Image 1: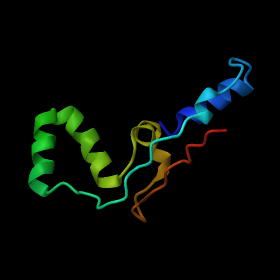
Image 2 (image 1 turned 180 degrees about the horizontal axis):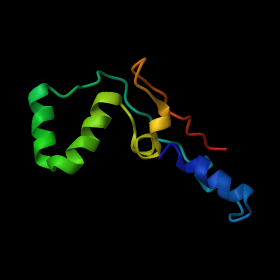
Image 3 (image 1 turned 60 degrees about the horizontal axis):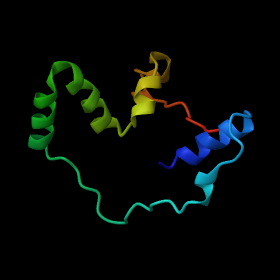
Image 4 (image 1 turned 135 degrees about the horizontal axis):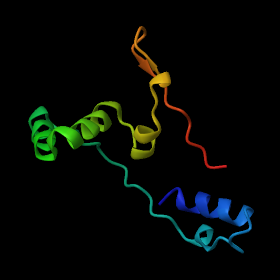
Length: 94
C-alpha cells in the first residue's frame, strides 16, 4: 500500500491519469511493537508444507529479509561469494 501513491504519481507524470487522489488519503501506520521471529520448528513446518520448490523461495525471504520484488529482481552479479555479501539493487519509485 505504501507504494501505491508513488506508482500513481508515475502514471500522472506519464499523462495516463489526471490526478492522484490516493495522496489525500490517510495511510495506515504500522503499529510499533515487538517483531516476532519464527522458531526453528515453525520454520521447518512452513518449509515442509510449501514443498521443495516454494519452500526454497520462502527460506530465502526468511533468512535474508528480502521482499518479493527484491527476490525476483536479484541477480548473480549481486552476489560476492568471497566476501559473503549480497548487494540488493535499490528499488526506487521515480
